[in-house]
Structure formats: structure tokens, C-alpha cells
Image (cartoon, rainbow, N blue to C red):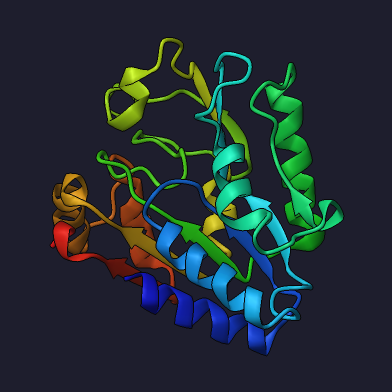
Length: 225
């Protein structure tokens, strides 16, 4: 899974060195990020012109929380790839103006976009980024309510002060991306992968919207099949 992700991204960067890349946190794409960083270590010019925007962020965490998406993508991708501050756009998890922060991210999308590559994982409930199941979905970057199934999953349930909301790219930014790489890793994502294979599109399973996109690569590890 990680090898395939690396090869796909490497090819795209070689074809367009300044491509617009949406980076996601979490364990699923981390192996691919490590390979990209290792390649960068040998080929200094690789990725030097990338433009990078962060997929989403948790809101309402305690100050200094080690669980922010920012810390994760900084350690795994932004710093190893040497992305300068003027080519990286992000949301601060401690922002006092979440709506304004999302508006600024959407303005970046309008100016720099569409995305050339969008990295996604999948939630146990089928969310992509933090677009949770529901009857309606917002198109731009937006503040979102987190589903109970999201808060009850993984490390979130162990936090003394779990997130109280999310800030995320909307479905428009995802669906306008030229290439989407969906990473599905771990036995905990097996049920979500099985449901995704059924080509029915439903707002109650947001990942199903990817069936409508013309260029999605679904990368799955052995534990999730």
C-alpha cells in the first residue's frame, strides 16, 4: 500500500514539480510519507516546489495537545519534505475563530486550486476528511460536528480533553481534485472497506461519493481486506 502510494505521488511530482497537494494526518498514509521523505533525502530537488494544504484539524483540544493533525503532518511530511511556510497553508487547532480560519483555507483553495493530489483516509463510519455522515454536506472548508462513532474510535477516546468539533475541507475541494489517493489500513477499517465496495452513493456514507470521481486510487493494506 505504502509503496504504491509513493510511486503514484512520485510520478505526479516529477510531471508537475509545483503541484498542489492536500496532506492528511493519521497512520494510513504515514508509510508513503516516509518513503517520500527518504527519496527527498537523496534527491534534494524533489518536492522543492510543492504547494501544500492541510486536509483537516481537530478543534477544542487542550493547549499543547500532542494529538493535533498539525503536529502529525509536520513530523511526517511538512518538515521532512522541507515545505516552506509560504507554500504551506494550515488551520491552527487553537484558533479563536474557527469559521474565519476555514474561510481563509477556502480562499487558498480558490486561489491555488484545484488540488492536484488529495490524500484521504476513511473513518469507521465512512467519513472522508471530517465530512461526517448526514443528509446534507457542506462544499467549502467548514466547521463540523463530530460524530459519536468518530469520538469513540482510536486514540480520541483516551484523551482527557477530546476534540469538541472539527475543521475540514469540504466535498467540493475533494471532488475537484485531479487525483485522489484513499488509504485504507488496519483491521478496524475492514467493515468500512466492505461497505465502500458496494457502489451505492449515500450521504450517510460519505466515502461513497468517491464513486462519482473519475480518478481515485484506493490503496488497501492486507489487514483491511
